Image (cartoon, rainbow, N blue to C red; front, side, top):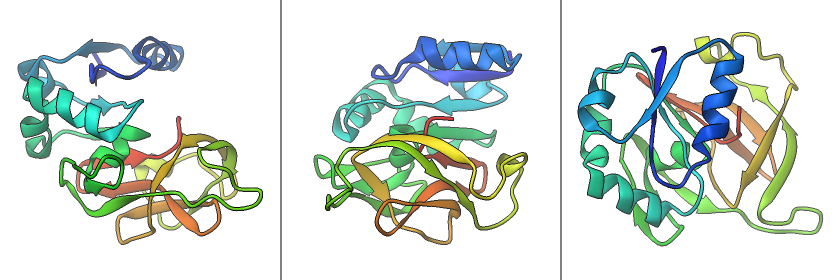
Amino acid sequence: MDALIIDSGGANLASLQFAFERLGAHTRVTADTAEIAAAPRVILPGVGSAGDAMSRLRKSGIAALLPSLKQPVLGICLGMQLLFEHSEEGDTDCLGILPDSVKRLESASGRPVPHMGWNQLVPLCADPLLEGIATDDYVYFVHSYAVRVSDATLATTDYGPPLSAIVRRANFWGTQFHP
């Protein structure tokens, strides 16, 4: 097994698993904390609301485990947002691995919320996760909440103001888009 995908209860797990298989990576899906702790790499996907996702993670014991993991962990979309301290979505306390809050996007003319579509990435610094990603590569976003640019930001995208598209702190990475 190359990576373990956390069964967070709200994600399209089959599509994520198929995407990894197309890349030649072997994955398993589980909510078992012992398996997650022993995995070589961990993926935290997320679709839905922060409150519901955190409730499921707390109930399963995964929320208590995640901050202690030492192996590489990748949060995708809502999974990235859950790595932060707090989300405005449902006034939710999250995992607290990254210091900041997730805020609701502001709609404007030509910028509806949710933000759905292809946007360009602007890498800010070198990181193994950015290998093969060129300045101005396009990625697909579907979200109503976002994180401001901070010290943890590896790449941004613009949807009005610049937003964190890829973040990292130690062994925890997150992508707001769907890789």
